[in-house]
Image 1 (cartoon, rainbow, N blue to C red):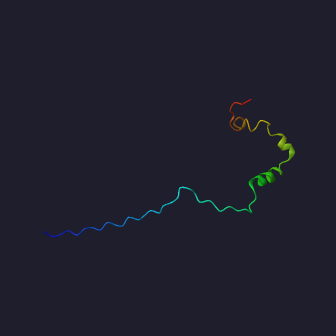
Image 2 (cartoon, one colour):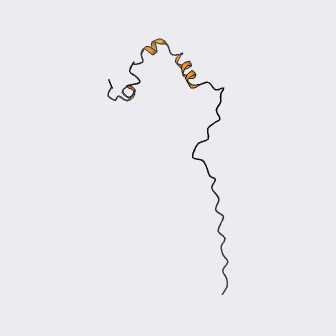
Image 3 (cartoon, helix red, strand yellow):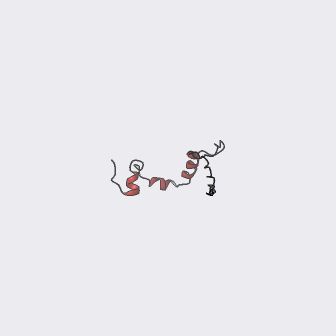
Length: 72
C-alpha cells in the first residue's frame, strides 16, 4: 500500500488585534477653544438677525426644526 502524501494546509494569517477605542490626536494646548470660535462666528451676525431668533428656541427646537407641538 502506497502512502499518500499529506497536503500541507496554508498558514492561517494572524489577525492584528485592534483596539475598539479610536486613537485620538494628542491634546494641543495652543488650539483655540471651541467657545472662542463660536463667539467669533456669533460676532459676525448682525443684531437685527439675532432679534429674529425665537426666545423659546432652546425649549422648542423640535417645533422650529420639524414642526412638532410647541411646549409652553
